Length: 446
Image 1 (cartoon, one colour):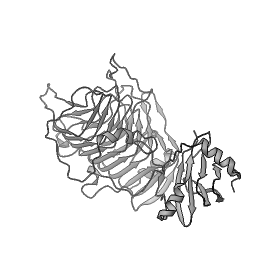
Image 2 (spheres, rainbow, N blue to C red):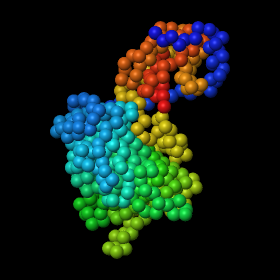
Image 3 (cartoon, rainbow, N blue to C red):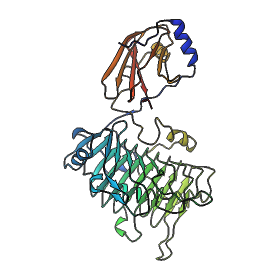
Image 4 (cartoon, helix red, strand yellow):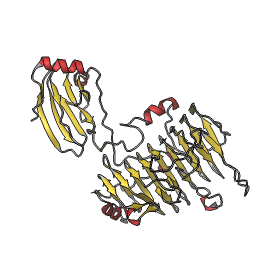
């Protein structure tokens, strides 16, 4: 039983007055068997390791072992998985090669200091992981994720990717049917950023996403079909957001905020792009058509529509000849994208806090909904406080994100306050009254 319930109603009301501005943090839950939209949903879709063996790993050797298995696996990654790397590139023990029919799903806080490689395999899902390398230092090193050699049906979702040596994520060499969603790409101080007097990148190798790696690779024709939606290209990305050859690439509802950009989207040989509903904020050259005059390779085509440009200069127009996607999707208004994707709790990046966890197990009646909404959560005054602002008692159950119950308070009376325990991990707080339930997520103490 928790002993921090304040019995005095006067004390409770005093605390409640002090925390009048209440913050409720949503439980960002999702399904481990969720399906992508976009190109990865075509031709049978992308299911990853669905139906296969489920394992949880917390070290790079186990991650590498199960990722290479020939049978389907759902692999939950826990904690920080560290590989070794030197100044001029990753060592072999830092590269995780993924075979077909795998889902690699990060539990809250999962991180890989290393890289993923998908090489001529298919039906692969990677979600909710922070991925870091040693920094872009212009040594033509590795990417944080490389997808290559006719790989197909790949979904990258809710990733936080930074400091790839050659790029952050490249999709090349005949790869096809890929969706990248809800991912944040950026570079940190590990990468050497030299900017000119206007703040624009001076070149180095903070080049983010290469889609198709050569004008002469005619085998890419009809492939490199990629959807990028709800992606945030953030600090110090200089180029390739993305750069596209050959493919039909759909770029929608994304956020661009890098002030160091030479350009954002580059349209190259035989590519066809639809660029819509994106927010370009304080960046340069939203679109650039690239011609290789040395061998007379002309640029591709692009349709630009319904985009938002805020303090952004350079070309903002398309030629109107971009492709029409064969799949259905929902396009949001570009004006909502910046706030949505930059939200640290639910936006782009490794923000999933719970897999397969229902927020509420019971559909509350109208009267009970009003009662449960009167129970409020605050993170002010240096503590996290649950205040029962209604005239009916509620039960409280506190657990960690694995479902392990940490404590219960059999009764939180009207006007009473519960000071929640401070723990290094996030907490799930479930309240109930009259057969109805409501859940909160309490972020970890930082």
